Amino acid sequence: EPEVTQTPSHQVTQMGQEVILRCVPISNHLYFYWYRQILGQKVEFLVSFYNNEISEKSEIFDDQFSVERPDGSNFTLKIRSTKLEDSAMYFCASSEGPSEQYFGPGTRLTVT
Amino acid sequence: GQQLNQSPQSMFIQEGEDVSMNCTSSSIFNTWLWYKQDPGEGPVLLIALYKAGELTSNGRLTAQFGITRKDSFLNISASIPSDVGIYFCAGQGAGGTSYGKLTFGQGTILTVHP
Image: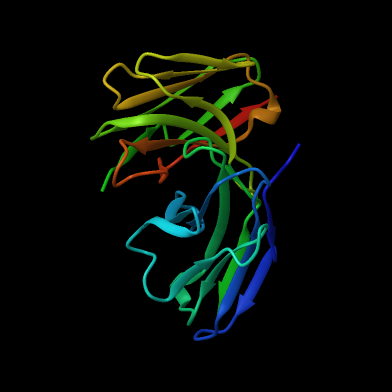
């Protein structure tokens, strides 16, 4: 069964450094998303991406964040200058239509 | 923004018992989804609901989309140890400003004692 994959599974970085989280969505899906989950809390929406552009973003998704679909298979989330409060699990999701979103296993980002 | 209240926060049950959990919202959603999350993993989609009043089953799981479009319920019948995990409801708002975005509840932690 097709699934969303994410790399790396765990990323440790120093405050102020740039990180790129990578995702390979399910191949025939057209909608792509990033969510994050701070330890012990609920899943929070960051951004949705469709037709090669951002369709919606949350207040969390400020100028430090960007997304890109550099080729036909990858979808990336970049954080330009990480802060301590960016430490969280980051989930990529994809869907064929906008509703039934399938999540990847996540990347645990630790900012020290 | 839209807020979801999910209850109960946690449940401790015996294997074989039935379980119910629910989500309520202050605003209308067009779609309700239920996910299960195991520790250290991503949410796994269990059931999606698209119409007010809709009742949908997936094996031992049954979910309903409330008539008011502001709530949803998930029932698990005859629980087994592998049902352990965190269950999240998620709502997707009316089109326009909330296109695609899922708003998640706080989760219900389910523990099943053999």
